[in-house]
Image (cartoon, rainbow, N blue to C red; front, side, top):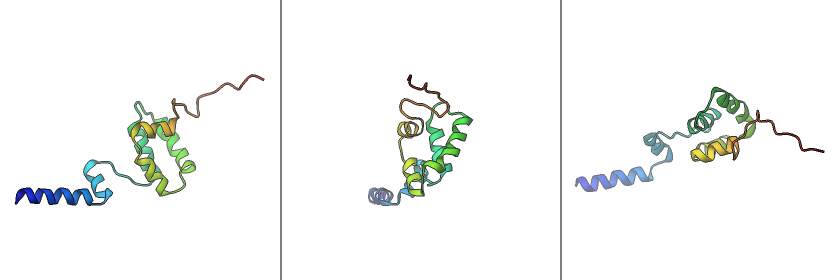
Length: 101
């Protein structure tokens, strides 16, 4: 009986909404710039206040709706950092010399 109950509980959890599963795993998708930037900062090793400020400023210009923000929040950490910083990482503060004419 206990085995059947455990199986039913596991089946219920597996088929429940993603939101419920995220509550148990701690990975919450918000569909907001605040959530997307929090995900980026949590994922970026050595993230600074300037990284968060840049994300807060650029996010509304990059993401048009909740769906695209939610998709970003679901990215793996390496993919989220790569999406924001580029690969290899660069920032808007990085100066690239103009090509010689």
